[in-house]
Amino acid sequence: MNGKHISKLGFEKKAIKLALDAAHTREDAGVSSAEILQELQAVQADPAAYLRGGVYADLAAELSTQQGVKRAQQAADLRPSALPYRVWGEDLIDPGAHAQMDVAMRLPVSRAGALMPDAHVGYGLPIGGVLATENAVIPYGVGVDIGCSMMLSVLPVHPDELGTDEAKTLLMKHTRFGAGVAFEKRDRLDHAVLHEDTWKEQPLLKHLHPKATEQIGTSGSGNHFVEFGTLTLHQPDLDLEAGTYLAVLSHSGSRGFGAQVAGHFTALAQKRWPTLDRAAQKLAWLPLDSHEGQAYWQAMNLAGRYALANHDLIHRRLARALNVTPGAQVSNSHNLAWKQRVNGEELIVHRKGATPAEAGRLGLIPGSMADPGYVVRGRGNAQALDSASHGAGRQLGRKAAANTLAKKDVQAYLKDKGITLIGGGIDEAPQAYKRIQDVMARQDDLIDIVAEFRPRVVRMDTGSEDV
DNA sequence: ATGTGC
Image (cartoon, rainbow, N blue to C red):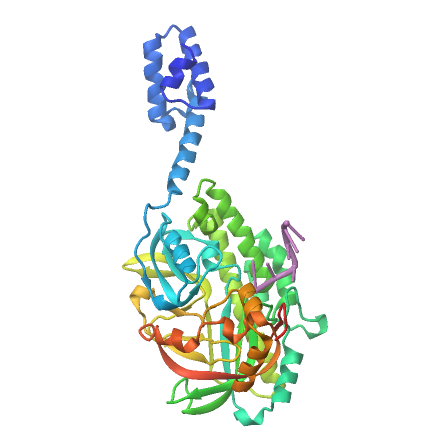
């Protein structure tokens, strides 16, 4: 017996030496070469049967490992072509977002998907992408800002009663913007979410609890905002008469806490599938029934609740400063994954920049800093996996916006719409976004419009270049 | 999107 005989049987790497060692032991015991070759083939066919002991146990263990790796590699293979998915507002969507969705629909774990009319290129799954998977959760299918969400509060104050200067003062005093920002210690508010036992159940969550505590109630950066505006209902709804109301609208997420959760688990997911096609690397998933998948699911949902708690404190502070109690409130997460029945199967539906729109469910779709946003009610469109757009969607990337838009045009647009802006950058200019009216027109089979919100005084983080 | 990583 020599290495050649062994290699011929198809043993690879470390298994060659282990097979050879075992074969020599058998030769010494007087077994014929033909019989040994047969025994080796039997081990190869069913290594699990030889794991318990005997001369072939080490070989069987090595073969089991090798076969496991091979199975994992095959499990990571992309489908040759994308599963079909429906697109809303095809004419508004750039080819890059389509290409990203096509890759997502080639994942072995994907079952269904849809693209919303605000779709544009993102990290992994496009923004505006909806993806249903089986027993798999994709950290970048949820996004870096886990639980990013919207909240609107109707305030029992006539819109004309709040002057622009007072609105500005309130926003300056009670909201905090910028990467890394926290509330000053003496101004911090507590929230039930910070006292959940969940924080104690993972070292990562335990580690992030202090950051979450100091940042709660803040708004962060990028496209996040807090604004006062006027809500118009053309007919009674939301337990309100038809009419105009003062309202607060906020867009915020899970801040540093969620970002770190996203980074941690996407690294684990990418490590899990080392042979995953390059194009799909940022779509690496965790099996939901794995330890890591369960840990992500727990952390993701905590980040979702934390983000809503941020809104809750933002609205609570502003209402308290106006000495009122908020009336109707609407909120929804638009970066999250949910368990959902799709075609009779329980799947994991990822919405990355998409509004849940089950039949009857209320949601919020903002336009831009100077354009109307909408309170909507879902129509439960099955092909859209009960989803709608999460906003107007970018038309220009941040760099393109800064390079092509002129400050004076942005200022003119704001003036024309009667918008007072605190902070904000050229990369968040209304002209960097698709026309919200176009986007809404492409999804009238996904949602019904309940009310229109017109922003008046808007606060955002200071951008790369001020408007 | 985040205060990170180039």
